[in-house]
Image (cartoon, rainbow, N blue to C red; front, side, top):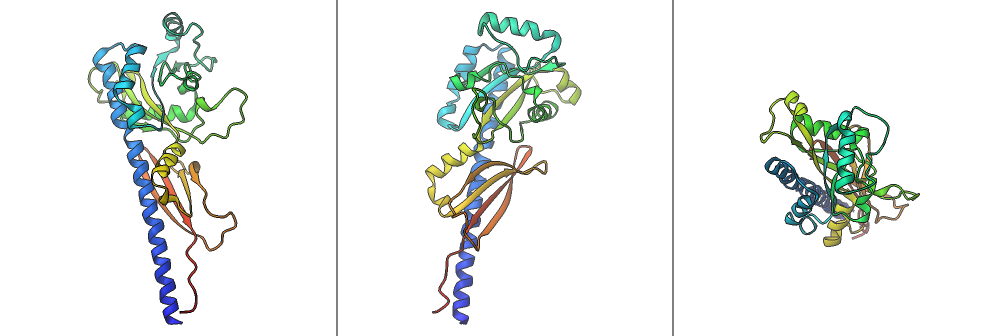
Length: 287
């Protein structure tokens, strides 16, 4: 009986250790994948600092030169949004209509004091075209992340949001939530040193859109053993909420005697929680 107890405890310890190792691997992957956007965003901001004005063609070339599809394949879009006050909005719309999109309009259309409409977005496929003109300042969660990036001069990530690419067309939305990662572009060739200077010199933002579920799915496609016979849940718990960013369900819904490992990972300004859930192996009570 004693020996059976020892074997059972050893099997359970090995199971818990496996859950922890998988949790560690998942957190490392998210940190690496999302953290990799910093280099891309710094490059985009530097392009504007060096050239002053950047055309749509030059932004497209930047996207290709950075090999985003090869290096960061789960990226939905890499964009630039100018910051404009209400007195400059009409001029921006007219300029874009003349040079690029004849029907360009900043949305939502209700009057506001300032705007950050999506101007460039790569790859410029049919899905991403839906986002052109959308004012991200108009949505509180995006606004909060952009404001933080502006005031700190650092990369900032949004809380989970429904991406514009996943809305419209009368669809019933069942797409996973996404996140947006922002970095400010200032009108100076150097980084302003105070909050007031950063606000005064703000020119716009470069940003990345991504669905963490896509990152999770791609990782597990390459390393399927990580999710073998377990459930995985990824949540953003920064603000006390529990927005689900990714999920994998491999256990039977009614599975009993489940155990879980819950750990956190900090990515930019956000705290994500990764939970790995499994069912310990059944060990014979007789030896």
